[in-house]
Image 1 (spheres, one colour):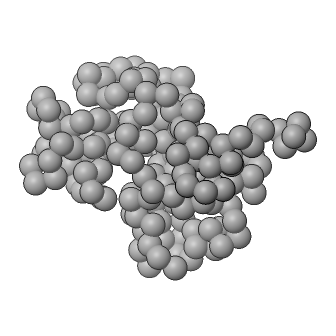
Image 2 (spheres, rainbow, N blue to C red):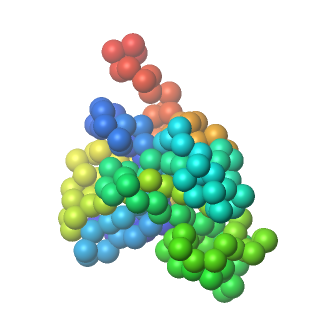
Length: 183
């Protein structure tokens, strides 16, 4: 099984409820110890300026927190896209390409260092072999990520938008009704 760091996991109809229903997960890390990612299309009601006011001007619209996943939802995880990986801001740790984790305890980035930033409550985690088994069972489509997926101004449309841009029959998943009984 190939590692899927830096790729998207797009939930299939095999996931019928819970936090991963129609989710798009950006995989930040994947190795023999398991996988870590964040759900990039589940905005929450809380705005970043209510929880981390000093970071409010750094996040992309919508300026809210996102439900990153069911693990450690009481903690915040920031993911940033930088303009240049060779000179990322202090506290930025590369995960895949120009995407990395941003230390919320560190200094605020200077203008232009970050192209985008999202703050997530919690994250998605998989134990060794768990993600591979879920992919094999058909719960996830593994698709290429675009940097804009992380900072999409319309996260509610991301599930269908990501599917629609795929080649071949995969794009037809985007037309799947919310309730398959309505088909």
